[in-house]
Image 1 (tube, one colour):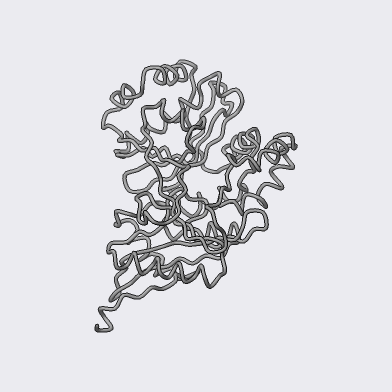
Image 2 (cartoon, rainbow, N blue to C red):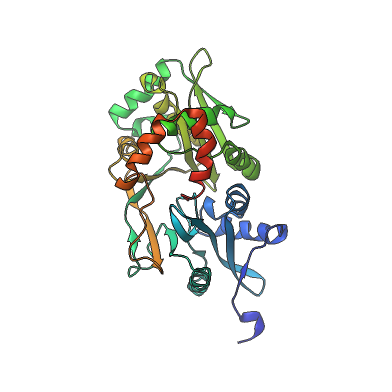
Length: 350
């Protein structure tokens, strides 16, 4: 085989702007790729959370054929792993050719063994390895955005549609925020009530800076201007992905959460977007039921594992019974303490 025809797997270096631009151009055109394959996540995971990143790409004759963003997490509490990609619901290999996909996976497995991790985790939407151990806890919810606003309203099941109309009648208003301040206040209070640590505020500010117009905060207020509910969304190709959200206690009574997602869908329709990606939920949870009430159907996610120094797939999630005491303790902790301590814990959850 000639040198020009040989497929090579290489690692994206921090500060290599030219290759990062080529990486993102490939991701934009690759059918298997998602927003979470973008090169900017190297800064989010590497600089904000301090994890070592291995953003691999397969190249032949100067042309990219596949990418695989990986990060190493070393935690006494949650273990030692190599993941594509921490803090992302989608990840794994995105490739135009099977040869490139296989080459990237082989390199990932070599890295995993070299680093001495307990497991390698690839977060695929479509199953690639039926014989690998799987995590079957998560599903995703995606639905077409119809061209007309009223058609989208009528596509919402009757009971949920009534909640949206209740929010409209309550005079709620949606605003696009320039920064993450109002969002973070609602988000941090919300996750604290659920007993889980919050991401650091600087992470959300970095998301807005890194991804520019492809990252947006929508905040819903009452008629007096009091913030009630907020969502940080990603935009990728013709899709909108509401990803992080938070709300005040008063939001439920005023149907602010229902209004928030309708307002996001309405705005996406006006922009000509085609897909509303409601994101990942654990099966049989409140968020799972909420999304089904909107008429979305769940699609299983295929989180596939290579196990090296462990015998079972890890269960680092709030459904794990061994974390229940921690969750109860976290709920009782003052919010200021939780916001200070939370980033040190959540960085290792991934």
